[in-house]
Image (tube, rainbow, N blue to C red; front, side, top):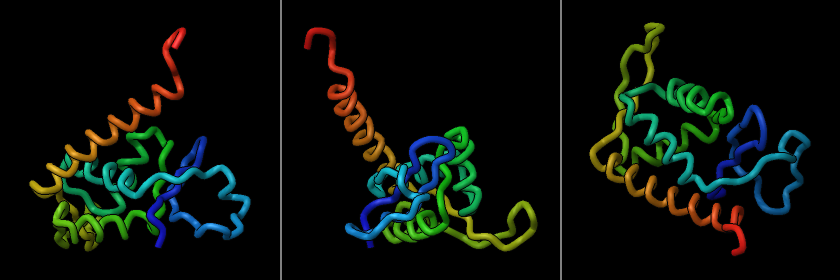
Length: 140
């Protein structure tokens, strides 16, 4: 499995698993760029910082907070939940959803809160570094 999720450039954005190197990409994927799975993990952890949520709700919250710029495919979202739960950063329980259907709710653990802080710090460093390259200071 690839170590990437893919974000579509423009509106709306769809997150899908990366295609293996050399595989012909369909027309629909021509404007996609790859981001490391850690980015998706960070978005999930951040969303759960606002409180427990079921899987579909987490995807919707990311979409809404990004003003429809990020739409996450279930094929990327649910494997990320399982990975984060195995790491001990999420816990889960089955309970009725708002529509009174059985849904798996995810909750951020104390270890997940610490991981979110680490991921946020790394993300901030990446953004600063890329900004230095993309927007060098006048005369620099």
